Every structure is written in structure tokens, then in C-alpha cells.
Length: 144
Ligand SMILES: [Fe+2]
Ligand SMILES: [Fe+2]
Image 1 (cartoon, rainbow, N blue to C red):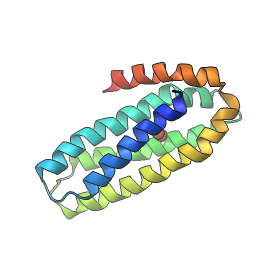
Image 2 (cartoon, rainbow, N blue to C red; image 1 turned 45 degrees about the vertical axis):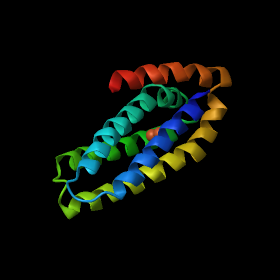
Image 3 (spheres, protein in one colour; image 1 turned 120 degrees about the horizontal axis):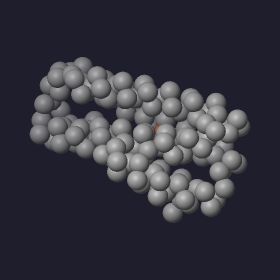
């Protein structure tokens, strides 16, 4: 396993949880339960990504700009996650805002898997890409 495969694993989890959440309604037990998994998962993933994968990309002039763009999208998602955490789940606003977050995250993840990974492969050696998995796991566990 390398860092690219490890990141995609998390993305698939996020996609599944987000799709399930989108199908919930009101202040239900199901919505609460899924949200309580989704929010920390999305936050820990972004933090671990920044501390390991993006730390490498920001250090290289060739990938710095793309990395900064991704990190700014993390900030936008973090703000939406916070806002959603404070919103009443039974309000119609909740689902509307969640759909915005879901769309943003889906766009972000496919950009990572396509553009960012392609750029990263030029500056991160395969040996390093493998080594980054352990660091990613450790950082993510610490966040959770
Ligand atoms: Fe990301
Ligand atoms: Fe990601």
C-alpha cells in the first residue's frame, strides 16, 4: 500500500458516509449516528493529509501551489463542518448545507485523485509514498 491508495480508502469511506447522510431526514437517530462518524472522519483525514502528504508537496516548488489550493479547500470544508455541527438537524437548512459540503468534498477528492496525485508522483519517490502510509496512520489516529 502507498499513500495514494491509503488516501483513496478514506475517500471511499467519506463518499459512502456522505451518500448515506444525504438520504437521511430530519433530526433522526440515523442522521445523528452517521454525522457522528462522518465529521471526525473528514476532519482527521484532512489533518493527516496536511501533516504528511501535503507537507511534502508544500516543500517542493513544483507542487506548492496545488498543495496550497487543496489546503484552502480543507479550510472551507472545516468551516462548513463546524457550521453544520451547530445547526439544528431538523431544519431544512441542514440538508441544504450538507449537500453543499458533499458536492465540495466530492470535487475536492476527485481533484486530489486526478490532478494532485499526478503532480505528487513527480516529486515523491515510490519508496517515500510507501513510507508516508505509517505517518498518515499515526497522524490520523492522533486526530481521532
Ligand atoms: Fe484533502
Ligand atoms: Fe483527501
